Length: 288
Image (cartoon, rainbow, N blue to C red; front, side, top):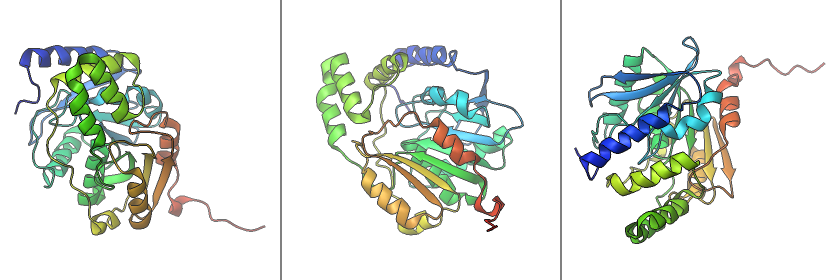
Protein backbone atom coordinates (compact mmCIF):
# COMPACT_ATOMS: atom_id res chain seq x y z
CA UNK A 1 0.00 0.00 0.00
CA UNK A 2 1.41 3.38 -1.01
CA UNK A 3 1.02 5.85 1.83
CA UNK A 4 3.08 8.58 0.15
CA UNK A 5 2.33 10.30 -3.14
CA UNK A 6 5.96 10.02 -4.30
CA UNK A 7 8.55 7.41 -3.27
CA UNK A 8 11.50 9.82 -3.49
CA UNK A 9 9.76 12.35 -1.24
CA UNK A 10 8.88 9.49 1.12
CA UNK A 11 12.56 8.58 1.46
CA UNK A 12 13.49 12.20 2.06
CA UNK A 13 10.83 12.63 4.75
CA UNK A 14 11.86 9.41 6.44
CA UNK A 15 15.45 10.64 6.58
CA UNK A 16 14.19 13.87 8.11
CA UNK A 17 12.19 11.90 10.66
CA UNK A 18 15.34 9.96 11.63
CA UNK A 19 17.15 13.27 12.09
CA UNK A 20 14.36 14.42 14.41
CA UNK A 21 14.68 11.19 16.39
CA UNK A 22 18.40 11.87 16.80
CA UNK A 23 17.26 14.79 18.98
CA UNK A 24 15.19 12.56 21.30
CA UNK A 25 15.57 14.30 24.69
CA UNK A 26 16.81 11.28 26.68
CA UNK A 27 18.92 8.21 25.79
CA UNK A 28 16.81 5.86 23.69
CA UNK A 29 16.79 2.69 21.63
CA UNK A 30 15.23 2.22 18.22
CA UNK A 31 13.59 -1.18 17.91
CA UNK A 32 12.08 -3.16 15.04
CA UNK A 33 9.30 -5.50 16.12
CA UNK A 34 7.91 -8.14 13.72
CA UNK A 35 4.10 -8.34 13.66
CA UNK A 36 1.39 -9.95 11.57
CA UNK A 37 0.94 -6.60 9.81
CA UNK A 38 4.63 -6.16 9.05
CA UNK A 39 7.54 -4.62 10.91
CA UNK A 40 6.74 -2.02 13.58
CA UNK A 41 9.18 0.71 14.61
CA UNK A 42 9.41 1.60 18.31
CA UNK A 43 11.43 4.20 20.21
CA UNK A 44 12.17 2.94 23.74
CA UNK A 45 13.50 5.00 26.65
CA UNK A 46 13.50 5.01 30.42
CA UNK A 47 14.71 2.43 32.96
CA UNK A 48 14.51 -1.15 31.69
CA UNK A 49 12.83 -2.35 34.90
CA UNK A 50 10.25 0.44 35.14
CA UNK A 51 6.53 -0.15 34.45
CA UNK A 52 5.81 -0.12 30.70
CA UNK A 53 3.97 2.76 29.02
CA UNK A 54 2.94 2.53 25.35
CA UNK A 55 2.51 5.80 23.43
CA UNK A 56 0.38 5.97 20.27
CA UNK A 57 0.49 9.08 18.07
CA UNK A 58 -2.20 10.55 15.83
CA UNK A 59 -2.87 10.44 12.09
CA UNK A 60 -0.38 11.78 9.52
CA UNK A 61 2.23 11.78 12.29
CA UNK A 62 4.72 9.55 14.06
CA UNK A 63 6.49 9.12 17.40
CA UNK A 64 8.20 12.51 17.11
CA UNK A 65 4.83 13.76 18.43
CA UNK A 66 5.94 12.58 21.90
CA UNK A 67 9.36 14.25 22.02
CA UNK A 68 8.13 16.99 24.34
CA UNK A 69 6.82 14.41 26.85
CA UNK A 70 9.47 11.70 26.64
CA UNK A 71 11.86 13.10 29.24
CA UNK A 72 9.21 13.49 31.93
CA UNK A 73 7.42 10.20 31.25
CA UNK A 74 10.63 8.18 31.10
CA UNK A 75 11.58 9.22 34.64
CA UNK A 76 8.96 6.80 35.98
CA UNK A 77 8.24 4.45 33.07
CA UNK A 78 9.86 2.31 30.43
CA UNK A 79 8.38 4.23 27.53
CA UNK A 80 7.62 2.63 24.15
CA UNK A 81 6.65 5.19 21.50
CA UNK A 82 5.15 3.10 18.72
CA UNK A 83 4.92 4.19 15.08
CA UNK A 84 1.38 3.23 14.09
CA UNK A 85 1.13 1.03 11.00
CA UNK A 86 -0.18 2.83 7.94
CA UNK A 87 0.95 6.23 9.22
CA UNK A 88 3.87 8.56 8.57
CA UNK A 89 6.50 6.75 10.63
CA UNK A 90 8.85 3.86 9.94
CA UNK A 91 6.38 1.02 10.49
CA UNK A 92 4.77 -1.08 7.77
CA UNK A 93 2.24 0.76 5.55
CA UNK A 94 -0.54 -1.78 6.27
CA UNK A 95 -4.02 -0.34 6.89
CA UNK A 96 -6.37 -3.16 7.83
CA UNK A 97 -10.02 -2.21 8.42
CA UNK A 98 -10.50 -0.15 11.57
CA UNK A 99 -13.80 -1.88 12.31
CA UNK A 100 -12.08 -5.19 13.03
CA UNK A 101 -9.85 -6.91 15.55
CA UNK A 102 -6.81 -6.26 13.37
CA UNK A 103 -5.31 -3.36 15.33
CA UNK A 104 -5.76 -5.11 18.67
CA UNK A 105 -4.04 -8.18 17.20
CA UNK A 106 -1.25 -5.90 15.91
CA UNK A 107 -0.76 -4.40 19.38
CA UNK A 108 -0.75 -7.94 20.82
CA UNK A 109 2.18 -8.69 18.52
CA UNK A 110 3.94 -5.44 19.49
CA UNK A 111 3.63 -6.14 23.21
CA UNK A 112 4.69 -9.75 22.78
CA UNK A 113 7.69 -8.66 20.72
CA UNK A 114 8.68 -6.20 23.44
CA UNK A 115 8.25 -8.84 26.15
CA UNK A 116 5.44 -6.88 27.81
CA UNK A 117 2.41 -8.67 29.25
CA UNK A 118 0.47 -5.62 30.42
CA UNK A 119 1.06 -1.86 30.08
CA UNK A 120 -0.35 1.60 30.53
CA UNK A 121 -1.36 3.27 27.27
CA UNK A 122 -1.51 6.89 26.14
CA UNK A 123 -2.84 7.98 22.77
CA UNK A 124 -3.45 11.14 20.79
CA UNK A 125 -6.48 11.44 18.44
CA UNK A 126 -6.23 8.31 16.22
CA UNK A 127 -3.83 6.93 18.82
CA UNK A 128 -6.50 7.60 21.45
CA UNK A 129 -8.96 5.61 19.36
CA UNK A 130 -6.45 2.75 19.12
CA UNK A 131 -5.85 2.83 22.88
CA UNK A 132 -9.59 2.77 23.64
CA UNK A 133 -10.16 -0.02 21.11
CA UNK A 134 -7.40 -2.06 22.74
CA UNK A 135 -8.73 -1.45 26.25
CA UNK A 136 -12.17 -2.63 25.08
CA UNK A 137 -10.89 -5.72 23.25
CA UNK A 138 -7.98 -6.63 25.54
CA UNK A 139 -8.89 -5.41 29.04
CA UNK A 140 -6.42 -7.78 30.72
CA UNK A 141 -3.46 -6.13 28.97
CA UNK A 142 -4.23 -2.49 29.87
CA UNK A 143 -3.32 -1.10 33.31
CA UNK A 144 -4.27 2.54 32.81
CA UNK A 145 -5.39 4.61 29.90
CA UNK A 146 -4.73 8.23 28.90
CA UNK A 147 -6.38 9.68 25.80
CA UNK A 148 -5.87 13.18 24.42
CA UNK A 149 -8.78 14.27 22.19
CA UNK A 150 -9.52 10.67 21.20
CA UNK A 151 -11.52 9.72 18.15
CA UNK A 152 -14.45 7.33 18.24
CA UNK A 153 -16.40 8.83 21.15
CA UNK A 154 -17.82 12.21 20.07
CA UNK A 155 -18.86 12.87 16.49
CA UNK A 156 -16.27 13.79 13.90
CA UNK A 157 -16.31 17.35 12.58
CA UNK A 158 -15.71 17.96 8.90
CA UNK A 159 -15.33 21.74 8.70
CA UNK A 160 -11.56 21.72 9.21
CA UNK A 161 -11.19 18.88 6.72
CA UNK A 162 -13.15 20.76 4.06
CA UNK A 163 -11.13 23.90 4.79
CA UNK A 164 -7.95 21.90 4.26
CA UNK A 165 -9.19 20.74 0.87
CA UNK A 166 -9.66 24.40 -0.10
CA UNK A 167 -6.37 25.67 1.36
CA UNK A 168 -3.85 22.90 0.66
CA UNK A 169 -3.49 23.77 -3.04
CA UNK A 170 -2.15 27.20 -1.97
CA UNK A 171 1.26 25.76 -1.12
CA UNK A 172 3.08 26.23 2.16
CA UNK A 173 0.92 29.17 3.27
CA UNK A 174 -2.28 27.21 2.69
CA UNK A 175 -0.93 24.17 4.53
CA UNK A 176 0.18 26.29 7.49
CA UNK A 177 -3.25 27.93 7.81
CA UNK A 178 -5.06 24.60 7.40
CA UNK A 179 -2.90 22.85 10.00
CA UNK A 180 -3.23 25.77 12.42
CA UNK A 181 -7.02 25.73 12.10
CA UNK A 182 -7.19 21.95 12.49
CA UNK A 183 -4.84 21.66 15.47
CA UNK A 184 -5.68 24.93 17.21
CA UNK A 185 -2.05 25.35 18.28
CA UNK A 186 1.37 25.88 16.78
CA UNK A 187 3.75 22.93 16.86
CA UNK A 188 7.41 23.42 17.85
CA UNK A 189 9.37 24.97 14.96
CA UNK A 190 11.30 21.98 13.55
CA UNK A 191 8.35 19.63 13.87
CA UNK A 192 5.92 22.16 12.31
CA UNK A 193 8.14 22.47 9.23
CA UNK A 194 8.35 18.71 8.95
CA UNK A 195 4.62 18.24 9.60
CA UNK A 196 3.73 20.74 6.87
CA UNK A 197 5.78 18.75 4.39
CA UNK A 198 4.02 15.56 5.50
CA UNK A 199 0.65 17.18 4.79
CA UNK A 200 1.69 17.75 1.20
CA UNK A 201 3.24 14.33 0.58
CA UNK A 202 1.28 11.81 2.66
CA UNK A 203 -1.93 10.03 1.67
CA UNK A 204 -4.29 10.22 4.67
CA UNK A 205 -6.67 7.47 5.63
CA UNK A 206 -10.06 7.73 3.93
CA UNK A 207 -11.79 5.43 6.39
CA UNK A 208 -13.94 7.17 9.01
CA UNK A 209 -13.08 6.21 12.58
CA UNK A 210 -15.74 3.84 13.94
CA UNK A 211 -17.68 5.24 16.91
CA UNK A 212 -17.67 3.04 20.01
CA UNK A 213 -21.10 1.95 21.17
CA UNK A 214 -22.37 2.54 24.70
CA UNK A 215 -21.85 -1.09 25.71
CA UNK A 216 -18.24 -1.04 24.49
CA UNK A 217 -17.41 2.10 26.49
CA UNK A 218 -19.11 0.69 29.59
CA UNK A 219 -16.82 -2.31 29.29
CA UNK A 220 -13.60 -0.33 29.78
CA UNK A 221 -12.17 -1.55 33.07
CA UNK A 222 -8.91 0.39 33.20
CA UNK A 223 -8.78 3.74 35.02
CA UNK A 224 -9.08 6.40 32.32
CA UNK A 225 -7.88 9.99 32.00
CA UNK A 226 -9.24 11.95 29.05
CA UNK A 227 -7.90 15.41 28.22
CA UNK A 228 -10.19 17.28 25.84
CA UNK A 229 -9.84 20.61 24.07
CA UNK A 230 -13.11 22.54 24.06
CA UNK A 231 -12.20 24.21 20.76
CA UNK A 232 -11.27 20.98 18.97
CA UNK A 233 -12.03 21.60 15.29
CA UNK A 234 -11.85 17.90 14.36
CA UNK A 235 -13.89 16.18 17.09
CA UNK A 236 -16.90 17.06 19.22
CA UNK A 237 -15.16 17.47 22.58
CA UNK A 238 -18.37 18.27 24.48
CA UNK A 239 -20.00 15.10 23.16
CA UNK A 240 -16.90 13.10 24.02
CA UNK A 241 -17.00 14.49 27.54
CA UNK A 242 -20.69 13.62 28.03
CA UNK A 243 -20.29 10.05 26.84
CA UNK A 244 -17.13 9.30 28.79
CA UNK A 245 -18.48 10.72 32.04
CA UNK A 246 -21.78 8.86 31.62
CA UNK A 247 -20.48 5.51 30.42
CA UNK A 248 -16.89 4.81 31.47
CA UNK A 249 -16.20 3.59 34.99
CA UNK A 250 -13.30 5.30 36.75
CA UNK A 251 -13.14 8.05 34.09
CA UNK A 252 -11.41 11.33 34.90
CA UNK A 253 -12.13 14.00 32.29
CA UNK A 254 -10.10 17.22 32.05
CA UNK A 255 -11.95 19.65 29.80
CA UNK A 256 -9.85 22.58 28.60
CA UNK A 257 -12.29 25.14 27.14
CA UNK A 258 -9.65 27.20 25.31
CA UNK A 259 -7.60 24.31 23.87
CA UNK A 260 -7.88 22.89 20.36
CA UNK A 261 -7.15 19.46 18.95
CA UNK A 262 -3.45 19.61 19.84
CA UNK A 263 -3.39 19.75 23.63
CA UNK A 264 0.10 20.33 24.99
CA UNK A 265 1.78 20.71 28.37
CA UNK A 266 -0.01 17.74 29.95
CA UNK A 267 3.00 15.69 31.03
CA UNK A 268 2.78 16.44 34.75
CA UNK A 269 -0.95 15.69 34.94
CA UNK A 270 -0.53 12.51 32.92
CA UNK A 271 2.28 11.36 35.19
CA UNK A 272 0.23 12.14 38.31
CA UNK A 273 -2.63 10.04 36.97
CA UNK A 274 -0.45 7.14 35.84
CA UNK A 275 1.44 6.93 39.14
CA UNK A 276 -1.48 7.46 41.53
CA UNK A 277 -2.29 4.55 43.78
CA UNK A 278 -5.46 2.67 42.80
CA UNK A 279 -8.35 3.20 45.23
CA UNK A 280 -7.92 -0.28 46.70
CA UNK A 281 -4.28 0.46 47.56
CA UNK A 282 -4.85 3.75 49.34
CA UNK A 283 -4.85 4.01 53.11
CA UNK A 284 -8.40 4.20 54.48
CA UNK A 285 -9.59 7.48 55.96
CA UNK A 286 -9.63 7.07 59.72
CA UNK A 287 -11.10 9.72 61.95
CA UNK A 288 -9.00 10.57 65.02
